[in-house]
Image (cartoon, rainbow, N blue to C red; front, side):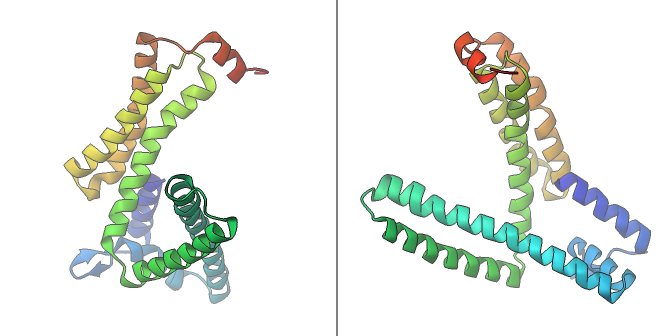
Length: 209
């Protein structure tokens, strides 16, 4: 997703801009698409697009806030720290944490911390590299072993993080691509050299397929 967005933004920049907008002497890639929308579209269509972007942003924000609040209040606090907390207490904690995360999100958006963009680029590459190959092989290849899946996840994570810091944030799309592709070779190689999953588990997992 990061790779596609980067190439799409670059293509739009070359079509409509003679020079990429600069902020403090550096390319302002985040301002390319907003500039295109405000300069090339009629007001009515621009308003519709803004409403769609706002609704998508609110949906994403609400999902992240709810997941983060429940992970801390239910999984961490109630699951390990204080299992005897009442349902009302855990619900109140979730509501409080949701408010805290919304306030944090506002300050991050308001002050435009560049660190957030870097973390997003790194995290998406790490997630895609870690889970894509093991997930697809686990769905469609019965010979996938546990060791193969673990090795694929480790390879994707290490490549995403290692190449990100080795090549720098500017080449994060390439690092993410390498991290996604490499585990597709690691998973089958390790799976064929390690103990397969028992036939009972495989038959149960692929029952009816």
